[in-house]
Each structure stands twice: as C-alpha cells, then as structure tokens.
Image 1 (cartoon, rainbow, N blue to C red):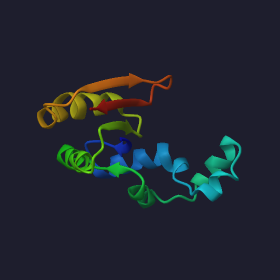
Image 2: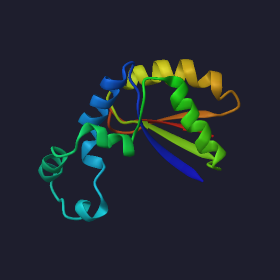
Image 3: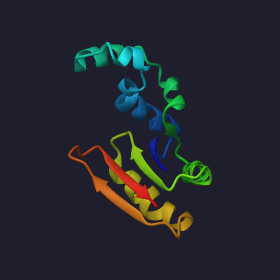
Image 4: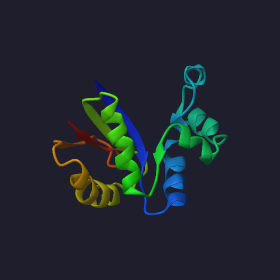
Amino acid sequence: MILKVQLSYDRNQEIALQKAHQQWRNNIFKNILMTELITPQQFDAAGEFVQSQELYEHVRISPDPQQHIEWLHKDMELGFDELILHNVNREQKQFIDFLVRKSFPLWFKNQDVHSNMCDRPSYRTFIFR
C-alpha cells in the first residue's frame, strides 16, 4: 500500500501554517464543491474562505522533525509499504536540507529514500520504502 502525505515543514509553527495556507488552501474542498469549480479563479475565490486552522485537518503541519517522524512511523505501522512525502509549502530547499538530509536518515536507517522532481519547482516528493 502507498500513502501520499501532505506536510508543511518550516522552522516555526506559525510560518509553516501560513505557508501551507498560502499554497494549499485551494486543495482541501469537499468533492461536491470540487465538481462545481471549473476555473483557477473560482478555486482562488473559494480559497479565500478557508481559514488557516482548517489546514490541520488535511496537512501535517509542524516545525518539529520528531513530530513528522512519529507521524510517518505510525503510517508504516498501519501497513503502508511506501510513503510519498509532499511538502506543500514552497520552502523545498529547507525541507530537503533539514528534514530529508539531516533528520530522516537518523530515524529511517533501513529505508530506501528516492527523490522525484516533477515539472513544478515547488513540488518535490520523497518516497520511503
């Protein structure tokens, strides 16, 4: 089983939340609304009504690497074979340097880590197997 994890990491909780809200508020709507929105302008307009606190239901937001690691370990305990991590904010270099290169290797010693760059520079995933 594969799980795609939306997360927002920054060195400060409020900034991690703010950046998640800025980039991801248009991606948390229920299906009934998603089927009615057609243009990017409609998504942006609907996103204006999303409060930043609502992101906590959809995105794992934390400045604490240990918290992210605990969430990922729980996912693995549930039986997921592969975790695809998507940092929803645009601070990819910080995410990669601190979490992926410095923190995760200490906790995921037996896991393979693969990086996949999509055509959008703000979208990078890391796959743990």
